[in-house]
Image (tube, rainbow, N blue to C red; front, side):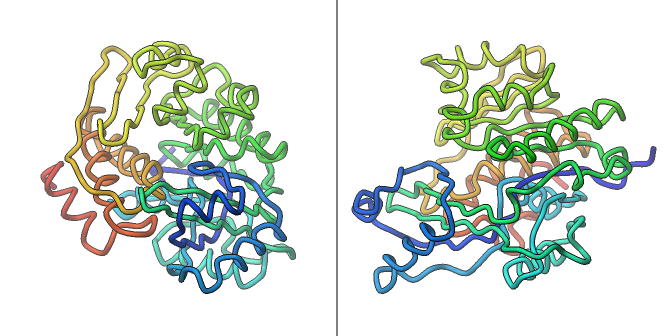
Length: 334
């Protein structure tokens, strides 16, 4: 079948409110630093009230891990489709409008169900670490109904976010998507998403992985947590049976890549981060763009390192206008 999309992603659709906070605020409000924590609407409102007068939020942005990734792939020059669930409310309007403006197609471009769309409060501490408190809203109801086999078959890769593991229906949808991709000869990619998902939902992630995916994304903490190992090298060896290829991000150390035959350490340029929110998502989007456009895994990792490094020197999960073209020209010569 002719391929219309480079990346078909399934994930939790959220609108992000990003705000700078102190470590003292996280301690005072008993927020687990550096993790994504699921909260109800009342808890999220409590945190926002506590922040009034203390800090001004940055602009609202359509987000969610897989959304950020498919938008990144699109902005580098690829094509993308995002399957998700948002409600017919103002938050859902913001999400769909931004997604379509980015050039990403979606199943939510039409009548949307009644309910409350998901929102994520992203708190950035002075060390650039991101801490997320997420109210999933209607996104918790993502199910197999959101998965379209015809569109899957017309894609080069499907991309599953690990956050889906926290909802039984979303986990079932992710498993179904992987199965449909395998049936139709479409590449499969999965990201662990967050150390909290590895800590609390390891069995569910194992179920999502099935007999193994073509490409696994993780960071060093997630990899070591999932495998109960102490070094990135040991974690990589333990993860090999679960995937055909693997990319592990290591912050300032760059990334560790297994291309199915060899292991490569891919360095990155040093930068001074101010906000790491979305860095892993950007990395995955740039990597997927490169491998769906004829580039080898090491080149893809170099592009992904550069994209993530550029992202974290400013606030927000998107690169500024023109940055994609500059990075693509510098790394890929195109």
